[in-house]
Structures are given as structure tokens and as C-alpha cells.
Image 1: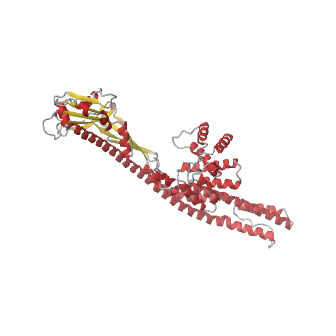
Image 2: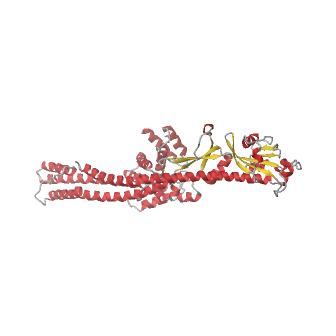
Image 3: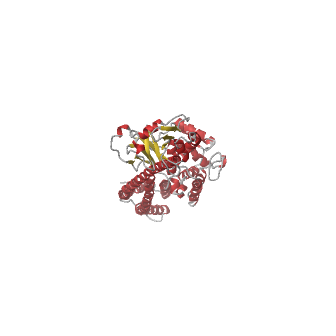
Length: 548
């Protein structure tokens, strides 16, 4: 078994053991807890919506009482004030407070006045509302009307209607009854929008289908999978007769799964500690398997070079790995040369070759470690982290196309990897917010490039790459942040990364997304040229993409 296989097997066994234990302990608990919390939140939001709509019905009842317990309305119903509707029932006022129709009925149950204020003119009468409210109850509803009236919900076709019925009496509620007042209010899209905005909860109204009217329906239905982005639910609303009328359907993001993700961050911290432990074991392993053997190999080579001993060959270990192969190879080289000077020169060449191989291996190991750090602490999910590596590699390739030197390519690659590191300093509520940020939140958000720069400046190895994370949010037209730079004042590395990042966001797959075609991507990039992006670099990048 080769040294590489031994190392991979050793690390794999330790990491697999740690991950399996942590996965069994935490995954099921976190997902179950998040699902329960989301269901409770949806139940609460649906119930609040019903309570708020009932409050609108109570508001309508109060409005109807203001017109019903009125001396002027009583005079109108007794024939003393025939101009009452034209003077006091103003369309503008009624529609402003949301009243859809008013119906005045005398004591003989005849309609004396009715008007549909939701219609385009004052000639329309709300006959359908009268029919819906009375249904097949007829005059019995008015005959048995309580002293304080009644209110409820009826369905006008597929449209829910709030109604309130009041006795018409004088303002002091004394004297005889002069008739009945019926007021209605439609559950219109405008009202739905107002209620949804007040509750910060998105919902819709769906009438109960005719096929479901004769069935026993549940009061609430919830659908939730914590692995999805949204939870849906519906609550049943019944009319004044107790008949199922309509559903209130709500949808909300699985905000509480984000809480589970915060707990998973604790898990990641535990994994980081475990990783450090693994690194310690790896270092201990490397010390005895590689470092000590290489030092002995070095001493033997130096002894042969300096002629400080009698040995003319390298000691061969009993292990079967790459170092043993190197030892045999060096002995084979030295066996061809009897002359001391030739033997010495050859040994020196081999030593240099060994050093270079290990230096290159160290460079690759260091770069891999930086990639792991950047992705482990990036603010997105696993697929976003994979896209981060992809974006950084594409940025490096495009920078090379623009004539950057090897050292510059290394730093532009590191800058791209750590471009969003400063986001970790933002409050979790800002990082996960799906609605538009408030002005205060936006000011806080625009500080993250400064945090990214400060983080990289603290590390000497990353300091030359700090210009990219600090300036890549600057726009070509000067509308970006944090400094408001424009044009060529923006560092070239930041301008290059901005173009590649825009392409990466357009082409990065996620569940349910239709990826744009190549021509759509090019069109969107050109749309940002001269505003967000450097127009010359956009043209070069399009040519670069087409070559690939």
C-alpha cells in the first residue's frame, strides 16, 4: 500500500466516524424541531388572519349601527325625510370605508331602498346580496333578529361577503322600530392586501368547491416538509349558518429551518474542533511516516556529498511506499558513478528534485486548506460553496486571459474565494431576510466589504488579495459601495471578478430553476455593461466564453 493510500485511509476512517456520530445525534432532532415550529407558526398566522377578518366584520357591524340608530334614517323609513339617501348616503364616503351595499327594509319586509356601491353607477341594486343573506330563511331572519342585530358571512357566488343586519331606531334607541338596515362589505383583493400587509402574512381566499359542501371538512390543513423552502396551510371559514364557505390559504417561508441551520453551525464548530484533532493526528502520523524518514534521507545524502562517512548508498526502508522508491532510485543513480565528484553532483541533483516535489506538494496543500476555510465559512449552503470554487476558478482563468502574471493569478483567486467572508459579521436576520432591507439594515449590509478587507489584512498571506473583496461591489457608473468608485478607479481584479460573479449567479443551478441559454446569459451580461460592469471586460468575457 502506498503512502498516499495509507494517509487517505487513515483520515477517511477518522472523519467518517466523527460525521456518522454527529449525523445520528443531531440531524433528526433539528429537522423534527424545525418542522414542529413551522407548523405552530403557520397555525398561529392562519388563526390571526381569521381573527382579523372577524374584526372587519365587527367593524362593518359598528358602521351599520351608526346608520341604523339615526333619527334621519328613522324619519326616512317613516316617510318624513324622503331625500335621506341622496343627501346622506354618499357613494364616495361609503366606498372609502369599504361598504359594498346598503339595503333598507320596512316593517312589512319590503325593500324601500337598496344600492350597490361597488357597481359603476348608483342605479345598481344588490339583489344578489339580499338573496344570499336571506337564503331560504326569508322573513324569519328579520322576525327573530336580536335587539343588537346580527352579522356574519355569506357567499355571493365565489365571493365572500360580510353582512350586518340592524333594527332601524332613533339615535337614543327608543321608540318604535322603523324597519331594518342591511350593510354588506365584499372580501375584495384590496381588503385581502390590507389584512396581509398588517399581519405580514401572505394568504389567499378560495371558495369551498361544490363537491366538498356535503362532506365533513377539517378545520385546518397543514403541508410542510422542512427540506423545502415553504410551508403551506389552509383554515376553513364557515358562513353565518355554519356551512363551509371558503378556505384561507397561506404560504410562508420555512423561517424556522434557518434556526435549525444556526444550530447546525454549532455542529460545524464541533466538526471544526474534530478537524483540528484530525489535523493533529495527521501531523503526528506524517512526522513518523514522512518527516523523520526524509530527515534521515537528507543526512545520508549530505554525508555522501560532503564525504563525511564511508557510506556510498542510501539505507533502504522495509516499507513499500514512495519514499522507499525514492531511496532505491537514488541508489540506482549513484551506482552508475564511481567517480566521487560525479557521485556527489548526482546526489545533489536528486536532493534538489526531492525538495522541489515536496515544495510543490506543500503549495497545493496550502491552497487546498485556504479553499476549505473559504467554503467552510461562506454564508451560503453547500451548493453555493461549490459555486464559489467554480466562480473563483473562472475568475483566475479570465484574469490569465487578460495577461495577469502567475503571482497576480494566485491573489485574484484567493480574493474571489474570500469575497463574501465579511457577510459572517452581519446579523443573521439581515443575511437570511427575504423581503427588502430597511434603510438601517441596508447601511449595515454595505459594511461587509470592509469586514472582508479587514479579515484578509490580518493574515499576511492574504493581504495582497484584499483589494478584490473590498471593491467588487463598486459599480462602473459609481452607484456601488462602500466607496462609490467608478470606471477605472475600481481595481482591475474587482472589475474582473464582478463580471465573472454576475455570470456565475446567472448559471448557478438550484432546485426548480430554469437555467438560461448561452445567448440569454450574454444578453443579461450586456444589459449590465456600463452600469454595474466594465463594458470592455464584458465584451472580453463574452469572447472568452465563446472560445470555451
